Image (cartoon, rainbow, N blue to C red):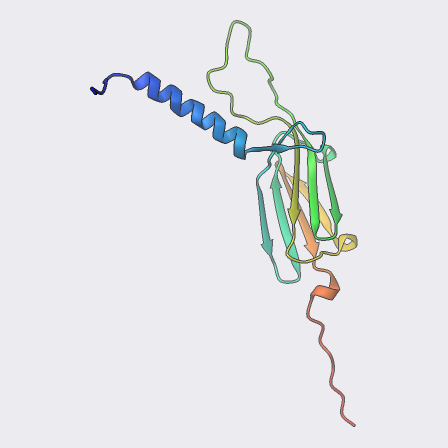
Length: 147
């Protein structure tokens, strides 16, 4: 069987189709309403006395982001808006990758955090949560007395 040369456009088309399939499979998750919800990227680290969680939500405002905690689970949800939803008149998309729409992300912490002492800040499209570990999950020193 002879291999045809010069079929570069077919390979590129197949590559683009595979990229779309991977994006749909891994970058989106089912939202609470059953529709597609964006999967926002996060960073989470243990800072000793607290966990620090950062979520990237470009295009959202602080008023459009909600954070809730239940047990070890932290949910971040909201809406990412696109500044220009459609290309200009008589134009068509060539590449359309900037995400927009609703997002919802649930992160399970290794241990329970104290929701009453938690704090959240929003700057440059990044939500930063400081989640102090619950006291029952932190080492408690016990003083030794003598008789």
